[in-house]
Length: 252
Ligand SMILES: O=C(CO)COP(=O)(O)O
Image 1 (tube, rainbow, N blue to C red):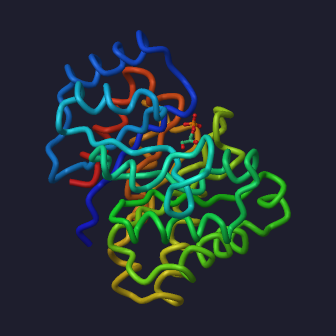
Image 2 (cartoon, rainbow, N blue to C red):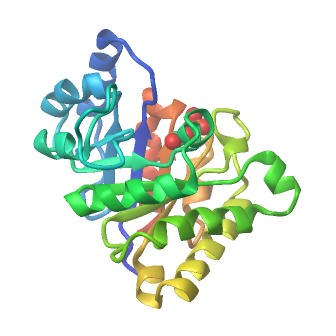
């Protein structure tokens, strides 16, 4: 199988410079599994990226939380993929449900963004996930397949893509998907990749789970066959983020 476990910490729009210093010092003093066991990424707000990047030990890589859909220019308030690369930022999160819902990012826009970021050399954490209403209507797989297809339609190479399944109803709610619920969607997504892209992409692409992951529920989730890591929100700002990283050891 050989998919390297991946744990991302999405700090979202949180933190003062003092709080960021504290998180960085917690991360720097932690013993984390080696890089052949887990790949770790943290995603601070843009303004903190340079200081976090220079202070954090090299086991932790940086992801931006967003970038502009095309080449930079007259787009007030945006940050371009070129700028991220210029600063040596390897990763970007694209299509987070908060941006889809609050900033009206459509499936097509997200697909364009993933394609542009990849074309410039960024690695992308591409997020998909259904709302509670969609789950209750029995349309979970239809929704995540459409979101994934909008990305697949725009890209040729999946090597630098991590797919994050984040059910909207589980984000920031404390209502984590059960391991069986997560495994079911992850397996379906992998099957979708196999049917619609190719077997090799399905076998290699990491599909990570996000939504109320914490230090207590991470191990059981990590034990699921098609779950290759986590995208963590709230708990990534706390010391328990280290326990979540260590859940990678379940796969050894
Ligand atoms: O949105 C998330 C990560 O991108 C998940 O957030 P929580 O872990 O706070 O539920």
